[in-house]
Amino acid sequence: MVAVLAFAAWAANLKLYLKDGGYHLVREYQVQSDRVRFYSVERSEWEEIPVELVDLKRTEAESAARNAQLEKEAKIISEEEKAQRDVENEVRKIPPETGVYWVDGGQTKTLKQAESTVHTNKGRSILSHLTPTTVNVATLELNGTGSATTFTNPQQEFYFQLAQVEQFGIARLTAKGTVRIVENIAYPPAAAPGAGAPDPEETPTLVPILQREVTEGLYKIWPREPLAPGEYAIIEFTAGKLNMQVWDFAVKPK
Picture 1 (cartoon, rainbow, N blue to C red):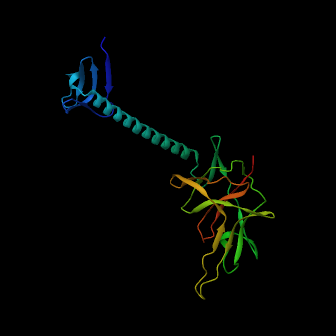
Picture 2 (picture 1 turned 120 degrees about the horizontal axis):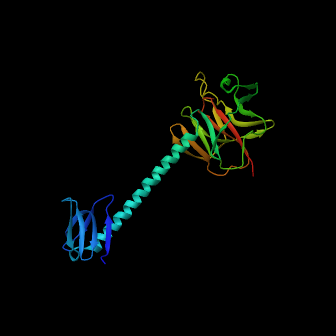
Picture 3 (picture 1 turned 180 degrees about the vertical axis):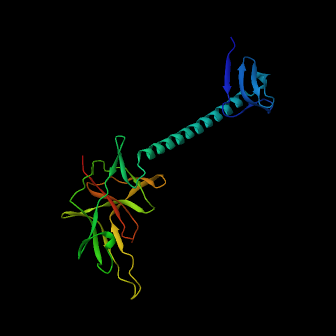
């Protein structure tokens, strides 16, 4: 019975090494008893050669190494394609409208944007109405002692669809009576008379986060470390422009 070993070069050509130092460039070859049958790339036809003239050890070693490399590359391509499919699946889950979202059991949910007010020594007003002629210090606040949206996962992941390129992050809120303070706002004194008002200083208490841009304008964000139980908000703003937008949530233990 003739033993036949077939080695197919499915992604690249092979070198069939000869014991005299030369080689044939082949598409594939077969060891058949005392002969080696191969398909010559140069002549585009099947040929045969005595097995004792072929350096099978070198040929098989290079073939095995090449196949291992091809398998490695194929795995990388497969993983990249899977990663791309995962990204596409993520994008399909998130609405195109500006906002903050999270996925719960395959269902996309929307984090409600909070209504914030500015508290100054002259009362409360809309953030954009705050000017250095009316106040020097203020706090940006949310009404209520706690958010209506709570999570038990201290490293909850969110998707943030931005309307434009701005700073964003997760801020720790400070409870004070019946409100939660998002940030402190202060106008530093002018550098010189007539120099004009400097930009206000906004100081939210930001927690370290990790982020990944899923696609242009869409970010996946989550806390770097587990959040302690308390009140938080995802914020979007341009420093010094008094345009902060707030999406509040709370973290509670299970």
